Picture 1 (tube, one colour):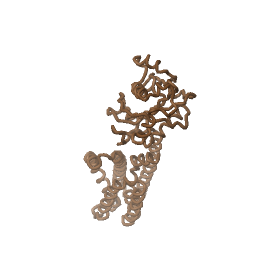
Picture 2 (cartoon, one colour):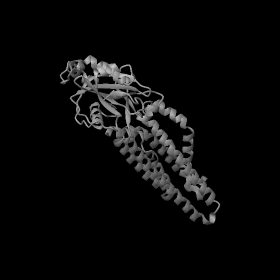
Picture 3 (cartoon, rainbow, N blue to C red):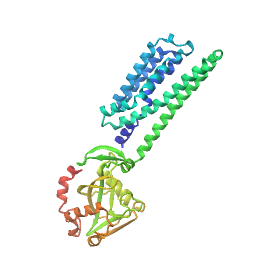
Picture 4 (tube, rainbow, N blue to C red):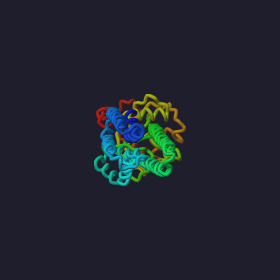
Length: 385
């Protein structure tokens, strides 16, 4: 869970961190002068850099870019010849420089995006952070433009009320900045909380090794098919197999009979934890320890499944959760054979039935968990999972 939390925080890194030193420099420069503002903003930037280094190590390089931009803008403002501006608007030096820089950056957004992809092609969280950065840059660009325009219109046209009008406009300007900051903090926090509550699936390669992650709804609706790990636990008792019938609103197997226990493995979730979680949710079984049988890859209309097959026995007294499936039933092998061509079983179950037949469990008429495949399973389970 901690790994997932860290990944979400990195993927939705609060863009305010990039702008905070610059905002402090700009606002404090209007009140106490840029020399004082520079010292305070520089100290805040160092504190943020240290915090990010220890809290979000992989974001450090990303934050260094905004630090460099802050230094460039601050240097330009400090060395800008203020006598070029009217004395009544000389305090707008920082806003003017930032506005020009932000406008130029927004105009070069596609180019910057391409550079980000080129130098960090596998770091998808950075692309999301870049989008967030530009979104907030748009907001501050509009704010600075409106503030500068308001000063030029109302202050220069009313020199007799210069101080009063200027203070009023500046107060609205500060309030707007505070509102944006508070809004962004609340928004990012809510996004992170929602993402932690949603399902994220790992993406694996054909060898079962994790190579990425994706939100489950994005995966199911994307044109590209991703490989996701799932667990499949076959419940047997003597020569019978326990099957569950999917609900009619199931996205893939609506109304079909399937292996009793099946579920997607969540991001950063261990296989055994997924089995226990699913068995508990679906049947109230809290201490299930099935035997690993095999694994296979199967493609569905929505995704590609990397399925881990397990076998469990001695679970005749089950309490199925009615919210998880439409119906459950013990099937004899003969009943299954009689309906093989009827189309009532999922393709996954038919694949697993062949594995089960080859294991010799059904032919023996019982499973004491000392069957002939257990020794082979124990030798390969650590290698396969």
